[in-house]
Length: 87
Image 1 (cartoon, rainbow, N blue to C red):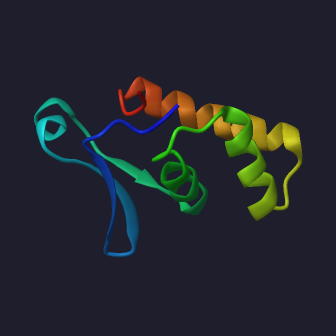
Image 2 (spheres, rainbow, N blue to C red):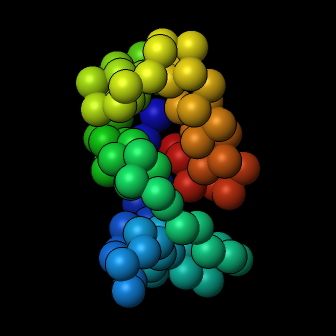
């Protein structure tokens, strides 16, 4: 899975915001603000990655168990899917 072209991450006043550009700017309605873990996952998803790779990334960077990492990654991916941001 991968972030669709037309979505970039910007830091605006200290907040990480997903910004649609090009044609996506016309089609996308809303705004997504990311915390530090969301930013890390979003950046990783600019290349084609598997869910397990995202879980491993969370485990390396945060002191959490695997089940929590899986739940957090699933919630994040589902949110992006619901907004049409993932290919």
